[in-house]
Amino acid sequence: MSNNQFKRGELYSVINGMATTAVARRLQKNYRQAGLEITIEQWSVLYHLWKEDGLSQQELGIRTFRDKASITRLIDNLEKLGLVTRVASKEDRRINLVYLTEAAIPLQQLTYDLANKTMNEALQNISKEEIEIVKNVFQRVYDNLTSKDI
Amino acid sequence: MSNNQFKRGELYSVINGMATTAVARRLQKNYRQAGLEITIEQWSVLYHLWKEDGLSQQELGIRTFRDKASITRLIDNLEKLGLVTRVASKEDRRINLVYLTEAAIPLQQLTYDLANKTMNEALQNISKEEIEIVKNVFQRVYDNLTSKDI
DNA sequence: TTGAATTAGTTGCATAACTAACTATATGTC
DNA sequence: GACATATAGTTAGTTATGCAACTAATTCAA
Image (cartoon, rainbow over all chains, first blue to last red; front, side):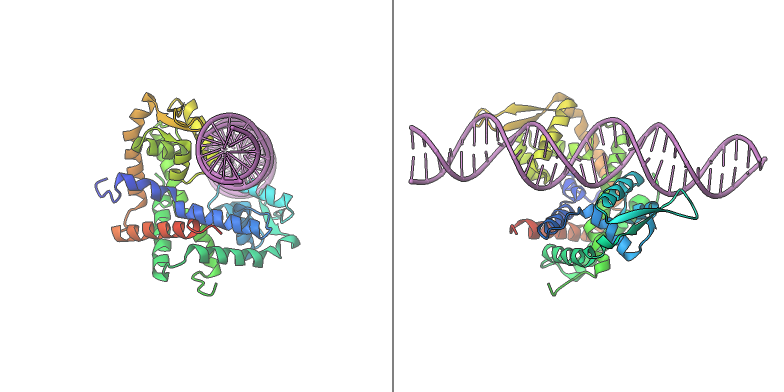
């Protein structure tokens, strides 16, 4: 408790993560302006399915840092949009495997391009070295809070 | 668009801001374990009122990076909890000034201590220099996305 | 000074988050 | 084989977010 690296008044801005929130809002805005009717949360699920199709809901939760209930509803909404389907696993009937539909294919390139555009907007005048440090710190903070369960 | 500083596969983890989310979750958990029945969003409003009591909802929105509607509902809930009251401004009757109640006073020290504890847990083995860089990058990303309205 | 534009706040609608309680299936042990 | 435990997913309840449409009060300008 003694190596307190933050003055009290500075705590909030870091915890709040205003910059990440601003990036998410800008990305959502860029999607909307491009006529894309998906949320960034939905996109984050599609993103992992494009990398590897047919993941279980459990696995999607781990990869997107969400709990089971959140994944259930995200998949519900993606199914309503006709972008994914649930397929019960043959090996283990508790498991739903989530597959992309044909309708999801054309979204991949467009959303990648918009994500790149957004990051370029966000990261103007920020060096590669700084970005590496931020990513590294993020990972270590995440590890600090998840490795040991207090 | 040419100075693309991210490989596609890395975009998501940064946008998602998993580390900040983990910090928020841990802070909420620490509050709960201490018997504190407030959310971190509610705390973020109280935090600014402890610094300066009697802010308008508009001003609270700016300081906490939230839109008007979110502030309306956060203040609704804080009022239900008996922690703040709305007082119509004498000068401009459109404005609600938000004041802390007696019940909010004892929460200040406790929540500060828990926030400090949480940050110490999160920031183990992360140097002051790295923290400064992260804060600086956050601010510049925020500025990049809010200074010019695209 | 009166009508237009702006500002502060509220409400409705849709999506999303977490917790906890629940169902159904699978596994492990005696 | 049967009962306890663990795992995958769903549902209910509460809070929160953003956008858009709205009301009420204020300010600006012809």
